[in-house]
Length: 124
Picture 1 (spheres, rainbow, N blue to C red):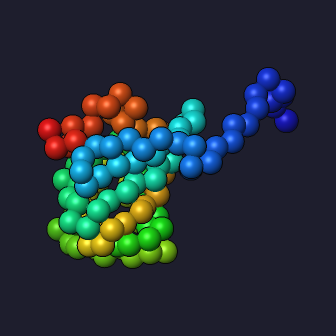
Picture 2: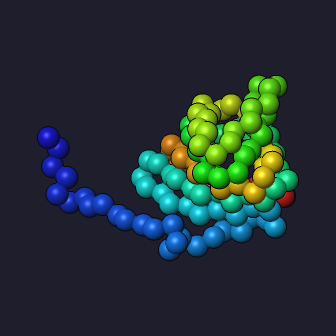
């Protein structure tokens, strides 16, 4: 077994993580490790996430509310309790059909989110 004595765990609570406001309709909280990122995404009803793709593999879990995704020309309604795997480089878009809290997990972490160069989410 590999010696991991020099490494340790980090603990968080979502209440301690600040909201990053991207628009009047969208905000998020991000926790990142070396090779994985987890985020709480807060979308108000009617919020549009424009079509985009990224090299990062994504898992989306709807905690509350519902998102209507468009993927490969078809619509997928993901409600509370639903989970969707989005492979690398698959173009996807979403609309919040209700006020929604979703949790996204990315591997590797989204560098554009960390650098704040994710203009498609900021309406730019």
